[in-house]
Image (cartoon, rainbow, N blue to C red; front, side):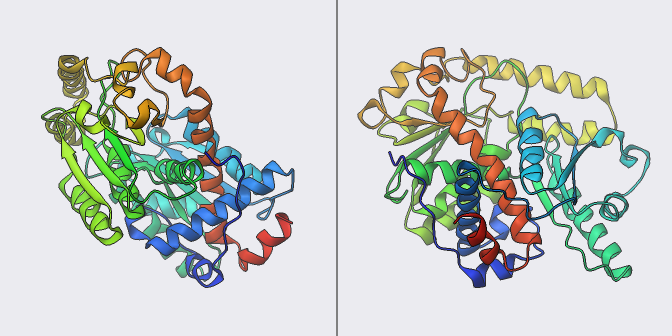
Length: 380
């Protein structure tokens, strides 16, 4: 494992192309743009470690709207904005006027007129979250154009129904640091794991499948029958694997996915058919039905309690020493054994810390002109 933090080259032309850009799905950006973003994130991490000021956006407002709770993502957003000199403001999505008929475009205009950046987490209902974010972005853009306002107000996807970009980019940044020789040829298992807590969104495994396949890795997706992911995200994963020279495969055996793996990412998500049922129940505002669906999902999960990342399964990995990853919080004793989690406690903390620098990078590439020169100043 590489213990030093390398400072990758900054491609000024690519950085210029990202100015004013939002990130709503990682597949919206090409590989050069992803590499440039992660290079910026690495620069910010080096600057923070060295104790240098990174306040490139002093006194600007960074709103983040959450329709689903997340201690870690809220903390990462607030920390990233603060380190850039911005003032973070967390908005409860359930306190907006969306429930009373306000459109996403109107919400975007209302928040966009007062803020300088907007993060959104809207991840629980298939077909809604990313569509909402794109409508919010449109509302902001149209308001700024109508007012001849030259501010850049990027929208950052803090998790939707399709993808969790800030998490998966943080995962990729950590994997690149842990495997400095690159991910090409590395076997990475992205596996469903049992959880008794709640029916989690599909976005993390979908985002991992779409993003990690870009690096030439051999990504194996494992899940029990009935826990499939959205077809278009799987198609994207196959396309990226073909383009990178890696591979993407699927199995219904957790053991098969772990066999010979260099890294493993065991993570629960809800049964696909029940996640689809949420759509109609949510549209009807049927809270009783939503509760019934949640209970049915947990009962379905309970049929697969043997899907756990434990010492036996870690023994199947390459030399029995695969890197364990998780977006946290992990259900200890269900998704992962206490022993495996304890062994990788520092690793998952370092993985989690990368999200702060990814968010800093997303805000900075969209908002700071001549970012390469500014970063050179703070990383001297």
